[in-house]
Structures are given as structure tokens and as C-alpha cells.
Image (tube, rainbow, N blue to C red; front, side):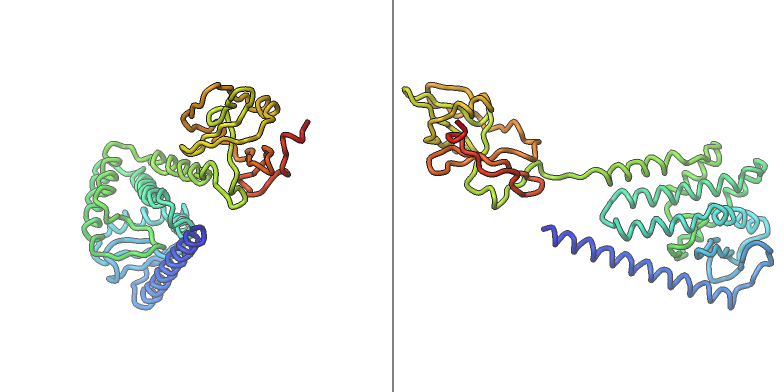
Length: 318
């Protein structure tokens, strides 16, 4: 099972890596085509192109190249540039790239996909906040109309993993962005940081069985107050053990040390209690068996799957 799950994890990571490489190649192809055919807007600080190749403003590539569609007026171009320059200044494309690297390594970890979506929303809300912080109220409404316009155009667009989109193809995100601007609640850290904390916590949480049987422990059993007792039969004392609903009696006579260690009950009639181990959380435990007519014990480490001691015979402890 371990090798099967490891193989699935590796195959999934290879697939995710292949998809990322494919998107990077597509991104580089778009950049080459835009540089050949696009209309470059003169700007001393940023590489900006206006092109019909896209229909929604984006920042593409880790270099931070801004692409603007041709169907925007001057005011809309100004909004788009402010928004996209915010993405560049805060290295949003690099952040998204790092998240995609983690998705390659931990593609099976479901919370990382939730975190990825919340991070996208956080980055867009942050860019919206920087874009409108110095705008008049009527200009903010114009910016909202611009978001709705780009939302309609974004439905037709195809973007790459290295681009930060001005708008999303998810209607719920657009609704939240509009409500955030109208209600002046444009600080979205509440979305991303709780998910980051949850992801960090879950990566340190490892679920394992409390105990695993081993070939080393075949023929042995465990003894506790809950599953064993000493049966007084006339003048003789016998050990009665109940394991998984099956009871058996050990013919060993010397139980004084055993009773002192485990505090087993003495009964004068046969009674099998419900099976319930007291030490289910203890990964190192004593295993018992009958060896040549003597009750013997040996310490077993379930975590390492090894013996931690030699066999100890009770009759020889005297």
C-alpha cells in the first residue's frame, strides 16, 4: 500500500509539473507574438502592449509584461494600468508561481486548492484597493463598470498560470469585489491568512494507527486489567486471557510477579470481561506467550517494529 500511494503521489506530481511546463511554454509563445505584432505603449518603467490578441487586461510572465486589449478607451486604459502595475509592484505573479510549485509537490492536499482560490481573490482585492484609493466616488463607479465590462470579456479569454487577471471567470468573486468597493471593505486578509494557518497545521497533523501487528509478534498476546485475570481453581491459580472475543487459559502457576505488575483481579469462577485494552495509545508494550511451560514476556516497539528486550520468564525471576 505504501509503494502504491507513493507511486500515485509521484505520478500526480509529474502530471502537475507537465501542465505547468505546458502553460509556461504557452506564456512564452504569447510574449514572443505580442512583442512582434503588438503595439507597444511608451513607458519608461514598464513593458506595455496594446493588442487584439487578448480581450481582458493581464500581467503576463514573471517579467511582468502588461497587455491591454484594443477595445478600451483612455480612462479604462488608465484603470487597467493602475491595477496591473499594482500586481507587478507586489510580485503577485511570482507569488502565484510559488503556489503552483507547491501544488506540484502537494497536489493531493485538498486545502491547497482552496488556498489558491482565496489567494487569487486576495490579490485582486488588494489591487482594486490600490487602484481606487485616490479616486472620487463617481470615478469608483466608473471603475466598477469597467470591472463588469472586463468580466464579460474574460469569459471569452484563456489565461496562463503566470498571468494575473484583472477579472475572474467566477461570478461570485466579481460580486464580492464590487461589494467590497461599495462598502469600502477592501482589506481581504481575512481570506488568505486563516487558510494559510489551516494548511500549516494540517501538514503537521499525521494520522496513524495506534498499533500495527507484526510477523514478530505472531503467537503472542497482551495482558492488561481489562482483558485478563487470575482464576483461582481450588488451590491453583491460572491466567485467563480474553483476546478478540476468544478466551484461553495459561497453565503457568507462578503469577505473583505478574499480579504485582499489572494488578490482575482474582476470581473464583470463570468470567470473560469485555475486551478493552488500557494501553491502546502506548506504542511500546509487553507481549506475552507460553514458552516451555513458563509464562514469558518481551517488550515490543510497534513504532519501529522491533523487539526492545529479550524474553523474560516469570518463573526464573525468583
